[in-house]
Image 1: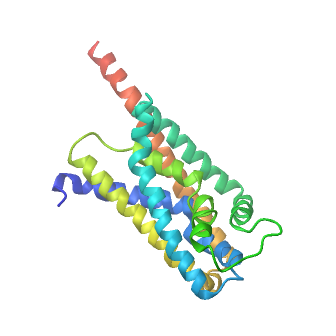
Image 2: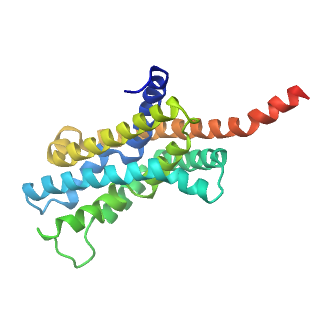
Image 3: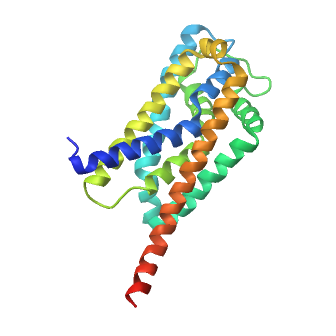
Length: 235
């Protein structure tokens, strides 16, 4: 059980990670492209791909959340620097999504589609599911950067940190579940949502991602300036 003092941290981190990861992964918008690039596959193949992609996506996001920031700390990068740099990267990614979503959609379709001259086959689902449909199509460098930035935003030792990792991990699993459901229902998503509504949803998600990146950067700046301001007052 999470101590009551860590419950608020778990809830806060869950909402922050959920909005950030949902914005960059965009399961609904990606499902539209997934439906296009797997149109020649059978329904059974698409369902198997959606299950595998959801599983691989969960592994990638959890690894980046849990291990990304500690690895960078091992190389001497401070937590404040991680927060500032990670927040700026997230904000820059969000700005790109807001200003040129069509370019990102074209890039993702090129990443997920077969190479020129390559035929779509029913075998090798495990290989295709991981590369390119999971990495880089679903959870690419942008998703990994967002997850590392979220991990860098962890609180100090104690119940709050436990709550943070519980909440952020649940958010990553929730996003992976959304990916599985959206990809598995890609045909119905195309019919229900359509490209225009998916693009509007993508822009709203990008704005949320911009807010998340700004908040992470503000936390990093506060970590740097807080002790300096306190020392100036004491002096």
